[in-house]
Image (cartoon, rainbow over all chains, first blue to last red; front, side, top):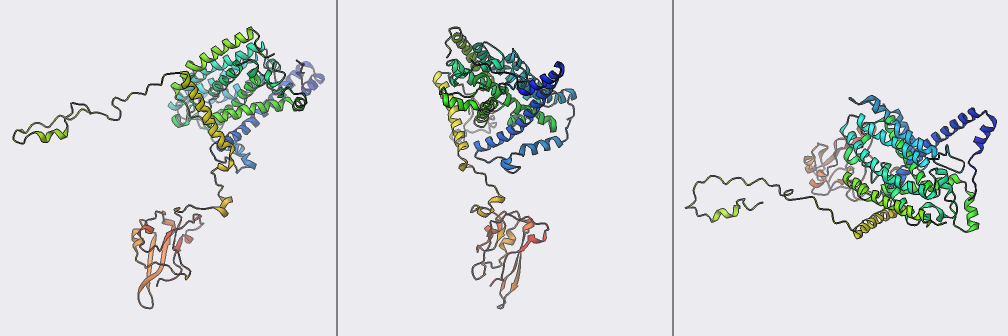
Length: 360
Length: 189
């Protein structure tokens, strides 16, 4: 276990040259600006990626016209959305209606604050990072519920009620899967969890905890797909049944906020999966020294993004392969299968941890 | 249909002499054949083999989509303005009406006006003339593309295959004048 420094040069520079409170404020502002940039770029890139990947899964080309490979297409779409009038339908609850789009994006922004993008790139390393992530990701659900309720539309209401049922139930099995890793690594800080996976790739929690790790990873992917409102579990949107579900009435910038949050959430969730199960910012190590040295040359950020984007591709692969579930099937999948399975998995993991049957 | 409903086949067995001017038979009970007795299919019993089969099915589906993803040659999208050189319209594509002319620049139209009568929009006007032998022949086949719906009825009406649906589809113009076409290049014989 090598010690990896947590401070980056920019932060050190500010701390060395400014009095303490100003350094903290300056570093905070830099972090917020960096996260805002990351959110924007990631969302725009992911929208492009989603459309391209979807198109290729369906034997189409996807956007090709705006910019090279259609890369500027999301920017054109964003300009269109921002120029649109932000319509307030008759009979909506104005406060709820205009507050709702801000909550999901706030939630995903807050989640990104504790994710370690690199050994020295983390806004704040909370001791209870996992608990914090679970807590703030609830803001997204709140946004969807408030938006559906405030829209004064039956489809929105149905969609948001569905998503309430769905997101609250799937959060259970997702949290249980995350707790398994907390149990194994003995800490809830995301940075410490990453650092507990040092070494060759079989020290990642997906393999390190025999059987239970893989099972937890699969359960995490399924339940986080539901948490993200992505197909095949996108019951709250269900454009074929509910004409868009909770965001039926939204246009312009309000809709684009929901849309943005969806993609940033996907990034955050995939990042969380990479952090918990795939060693986060740690380089892939094959246990063969010359190759390992070469692989370790790449900075941690690159490894983090590589792992995260592999998981994002997995999400997209799910979405464009499987048909949407019916709401009762969805809930019975969670309550009759995923929840008991993740509880049994917890038990198995606890046994493994208690008897130290973990790959050293 | 339930057992109580009177069968229409049973009535001829009653002899006409015994038949009384009875009240008409009661209407059969309303049944909905498509939904009566239909229940939701019971879910198959949960079992490990079924679970594994379902899980395998998921992977099979993902394999199918991945095959599409990995083979860009299977992409069906055609990028239109770029592929104009190689664009192949299908055999039965219905573009604007054309009149084929052979190598002697002659067509087979006899000015019988069946196409003019068949046209629901009045898009076709056959203007006839007399040739040197004072025979009534085609002078001008006036075709108004602006009101044509490419419905193919004129082609079906033509007994001589003098006109057919062409493959041209880039028909946009800035004024309406170029849309009034004269299809024949020469007078009929």
